[in-house]
Length: 497
Image 1 (tube, rainbow, N blue to C red):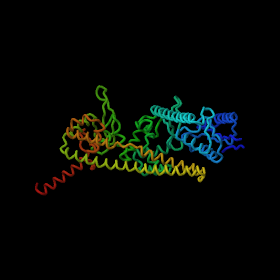
Image 2 (cartoon, helix red, strand yellow; image 1 turned 120 degrees about the horizontal axis):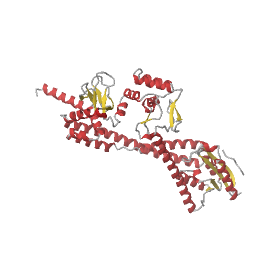
Image 3 (cartoon, rainbow, N blue to C red; image 1 turned 30 degrees about the vertical axis):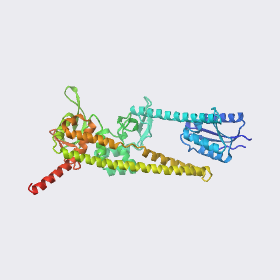
């Protein structure tokens, strides 16, 4: 809203604060007092005063600013007066666009506290000041991001609390943490524990979460969110797992059991621990359960990786060193390496071409849609400037279009280095197959895991600590080739070869 007044030199005032805490303080009032003093000193008659309270200057979609620009278009005042240019905008392009629009209505943009003249020098100064405001905003954002990373490293939480938790601060050091929500925490914990123990089915867990207000998508995200096990793993931690500085609703072991029941997701997560690189690739020969892992203490107090079955009494157990040695031996003694290399390379190339083509299709489609939405936004702005579109409609539609453009831009900026990665992996696999036993011991663990997963699917471990190929995994390259060889042998036997 604005307050109207009734000289030859006229002006409208615009003030803004970005935080709610400033609204009730002196910032808005002091800005207005300085602007009125400037207008009185320079003989401007004030036509109206507009303001935005608690609005960011990163965007022009502000109610007070839109109303002020519409008023300037209609009444064409001599000046549009702000306290500082950063009150108008903290985006250089937006600030220059507003200045150009005002001049189209014979209105000059004036800063009451900055020396800006209506000439080329003044234009240069105002452009520099707008750039400085944008730079300052970007620096603040960078500092905020670094601060969030530091908080996460200490086990703190920097986002809105997920369902089941409430945001809080730790009394001893003021760290931002989460505490259980007394209304929902116990119900969510009960559902998760039931799924982890096997006393509840996945369908029942989804239904129970839905009954307490979760959508299907939110329920799935909850089951996969490690924060419920007191583990932070997000952008602030670079997706590395960090123990939270507060208790989870379930234990990390229960969370791992849930991931195993979800299928695939847990296995991928397990293999990411560098201390136990074979986790998720070794299975109990007796019951088929993936072996769990940890660091065991041997003779002399030396720690080493160990894998064992936690489910059955007859399960296999093997040390990491023994498993690595046996895998290298099995690989070096394989007698189908030529066919294996050709099969692996063919499959990787086929999958890569499909993924790269899909990535390029999505990117091209996003670029086309961005151009369409930019034309829509330009047409919408022209209609608003010409008075064909009212302010409310312009504000709503322009915000929606900008949001869509932002989402599409994110798609175009996605990087796909899949081809380069795949070629590097293929070359590594080729080196393994040329001299498998020796090279397998030298290549990086990540490449070893890739080889085992794609080629053999994994290995079973017997109670005698012996490793064998995981024959139950019919999708592995090893078993596919074995079935082909068996078929050839049967045909040969039938033909008397």
